[in-house]
Length: 154
Image (cartoon, rainbow, N blue to C red):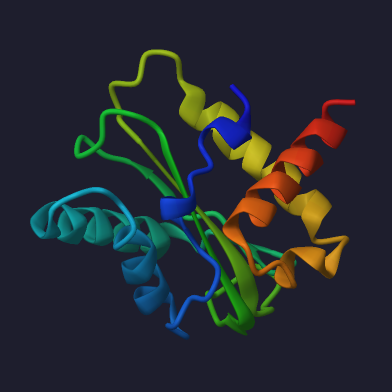
């Protein structure tokens, strides 16, 4: 599965408004095509996951993730904060890019772990280049991530 297959403009927010972990998670969950009750449940699941350890992996990247029966398919939601958010990252630095991954626990192909690995790989690559923070169009943002994914596949 190519990551760009999961990238949809309606699941990307290039100007996150919140400046704390709870607010960012709430904003990202708000992009999901779920009703308000389901969004609340998903938010609580993600907050509990964060209590186990921050998904702020460092170098300005966080990859919050969970499995939930609220979704049938694998979803990737992306948020960006140009100014950065204190997300409790492992390196103590502000987080600028958030890759939220949610999948059903019943997913038979286990794409969840594959996508988690791909996102981590792409995240490492894009931290070398600050262009990702300058892109203002969602279509260009998607194209850039697709190019990075292609370059990593050799």
